[in-house]
Length: 447
Image (tube, rainbow, N blue to C red):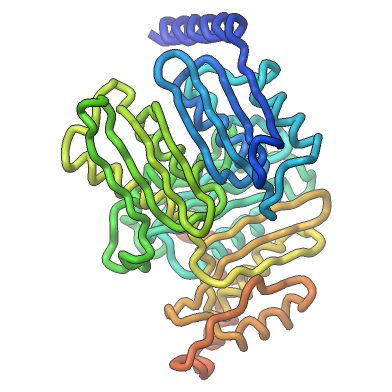
């Protein structure tokens, strides 16, 4: 059976290479057609997942897609994207333009089917995937265990949504600075991290995986949250109906499509997030119209399931709606944005997140990056009590970490009802020192 599957995939790959040779992709970049955006036209042979591949490449360059026209009905894929940089300017950097041409044009190496979307191999770090129930201080606990196990976190992205938490972390060995390959050590890392994710609730779902191949981080986070069913609403949902995306799903029988319209506030990577969801749910986008100029975004998709069927029932319609809402909300940052820039060192993430926890702040989203010897970390934090973050708390934290090292992006919200310091804020501070916590976690049995 495995040999037959391998043979089938090999035939698919050869057939796709033949189609590409006969119909090589074409990319046209035009800086004159639109007065306020660079227009990118992509034509190529159609295949399932190609839209996500194209959008992912543009998104990874931190380009803002202001408009898009998508048509992939039949055997040909034709897309037009209007893009700008983060400041709203046209793309004039020849290095970026050349990269787009090579990544999307005839020199590109789009590989076969959805098996390979976003896959990146790496030998200089070990990737760890974590999923579990969110709770205050979870990132601090995880990073403390990794520090005790002599793992240095060089890159990480953490999302929380609807009481679910997911993280993709890239770690290296503290001594060698390279990936960790010893099976016994990896097993120990997974065991202890799983204990942390479960916390005191032994029955809670928690998962720690060391994958053999590292998938595109944000794409993988969507898959992990989707698998953890974060789209199912909970009683303590922090978003009200006015903040929630407006998603509508109807069947257009005369055109033989299900039509999905999405109205929400615009933000970077919005198109990537919605296309990821359609792909993960096995829907094919045949046509789409995207308009995200101004503060709001309008997206219209004409889809069918991969088996050719339309949305069949109210239950399926509700699931599509909930999954798209969740995909949009996952990256909506709840809380105050803090940016940390300093020289990287082992245990940095553990120390910083411990200070957050001791000051009753919980991390709702995090981006940890290391370039050369420089660490640039972004944290979105909230008060664990649910109140807005106190400006005095932030000032206190910055004094400990360093005023020039930790900067506030935006201002803490004023809170009249919670202006006084909580008398228990620092009561348990000593208990949560990283070494004390790790010693506690080591004796917890794993089952």
